[in-house]
Image (cartoon, rainbow, N blue to C red; front, top):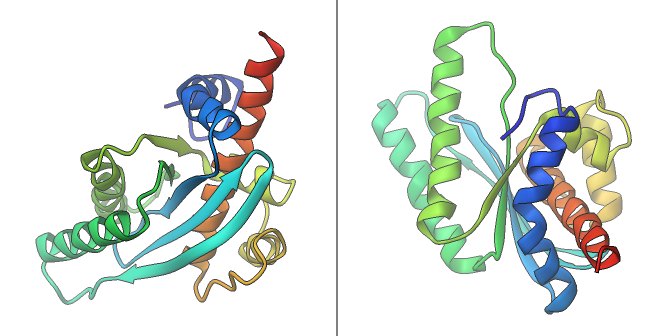
Length: 195
């Protein structure tokens, strides 16, 4: 779905994938967005309600797995927990943060496997999934593509009062959901202007 740098081509492709969802934001009522920050040890998730430019916090958390468990059991635990979250919150759309290239090949493979679960679970539930580069998420939420974790968390707390995510992973997941909501709203405005 585009490159990890968040360049123009990636944005164009992402905009095409969210146009149908964006029109639902404008035409319909509010929608529920599930944001996911993939990780094997800790997978962050965040749910918000969006209606046009208005967003509101619903829930967030972190799914943790024990490094002492077998990889298959950890992946199964992630899948089961995500399936429960999807069932409980019934999102209209999901957004997953893309991963950056990791110098450690073993860690990169494990992260890719956890990311696959983050993509698979919503897709199995019939929820459309979009992907966003980390720099695009940072730029959408903080205003700069090289923001620090503390800046992301502070902006998430400002944009979603009452959210107070307990982990960086949950804050990142909410940031991904915020990015998706903003880009959908922008795409809807463009779609409406072209009519």
